[in-house]
Length: 252
Image 1 (cartoon, helix red, strand yellow):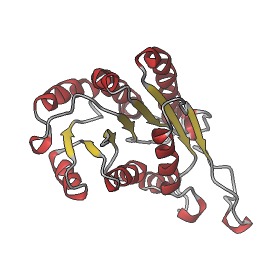
Image 2: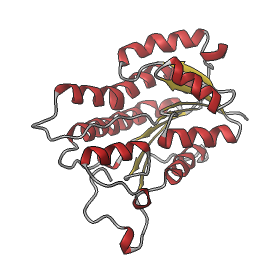
Image 3: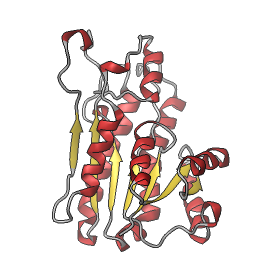
């Protein structure tokens, strides 16, 4: 049976790897892209995938974008009536102390990391219910613990946990599973950006391979229907002393 997955954040990092693994096994992909240029690139990268142009930074616009896709998504492919999995893998980060962060930094991170997933889930719930499907939130270690300079990002991710917990209880009667995945620091383009903001040298060998996080996500998706992985924390494994960070890593 061919499954249908809607994925945000498929352009890079964990979302891209998850999309690639699902595509390789023949599943159907509907990818959310912030621009037509990015949508075109995703269609080239994932042959046969449908795309929906929708800006997660503007959650109020998502309903109209999805309504249009209900008639005909990218490349003339209709948004399917049943969606097996909605995977929220997109995210943004801007570090800074509470005393320094402008309101725009709070608004941007809350919009993309929390409000957009809530609105996208709301709009697609009828199709997810029809499939007795699953919603997967790629959260973060920052969704469990907040560190200095991480207030806005951690607040958005703590909110994402609350969204997932409430949704899980609400949708259980409809047969919908809800999973939150909390990766520690992972070697992705976002991690490069974080290090630039921290003014720190970046060494990907010190962090989780995103392929490992993708495996954890696929494990939750592929779990037989008699069970659900509700919360899954993915931490860095044991490493030689030379590979260990010299100080605690916020965000893990």
